[in-house]
Image (cartoon, rainbow, N blue to C red; front, side, top):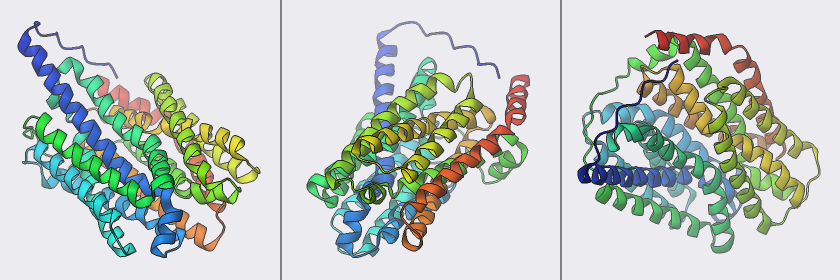
Length: 409
């Protein structure tokens, strides 16, 4: 697939400079919103034990706080995109992020697990809709020559939340209680709402997505099918284990106070993995995916078979973080390259599968923790991620064909 020639730069002017600045401020507002959204979705991962204890539910049941929003987001990604096709994108994004702020504050003051699950349902609606719309909004906010960088910044909000949101929330929960962590993310959501209202321009939709486009893209494009399959295996496998990483680490007799620090180590490694993958995926998408699968599977297996202390557990989490941090940029690049003429439809499918896999992973991990053993989640997760090697290993021709077809068009 050949890259389009860059658009000629417009003549320098004060108006152009002001327009670019306003556009980048809007991009940063969207990035903050998507960071708040994804942090909200994954926040319970590091807080399952104290939440379960406080609300009198098992750790496996507490895992529903990850399952519910993931399932809802998988459906809302397409529903919100289609249902709001004629509405100002600024208004839709503002409403969705406002819901996130209110839902997290409701969780912080909840006295029953049922109230928390209702709030998590609302977060799922927002996550799916916001992520699907935000993926292409950079095209409307900044000059054409800045679109690539702006899109990378917006998706950086997903990646940063995935690898830093959980450890930051865990540390806050360790020091101030889990309710403090939820309240802080709720306030962050409201701050994001204010930024969007004041910094984003009105963004009228240019084209609408129909439900009929989704199955068509999936059926007709083998590279999209491969991308969806590897997303299912890697994300489900990761969240089978990672949702319950706190009880896994405690089972290795690691002190409660060290868990947050270890997850922060995971997050820092994840940021490094993101930058490493961004330099590799353009030239070697298939090899980058295979490296991710092997890194995740190896890390989970090592944590399952070795007696670890804080130092060795930290080393394993570095490997795990490097692998998972590379996932969003690598998989998003795969999907966009697979369907360059149907990016909204392909991205909607990808967002749906990503969130569905979070939900399925947390659900499967909860069942394993309650009915087998805590370490069983590591074996299940490692096995699922390893299966990606088989899926992607036979997909080389299909992905090249899609790229060649796109270049021909």
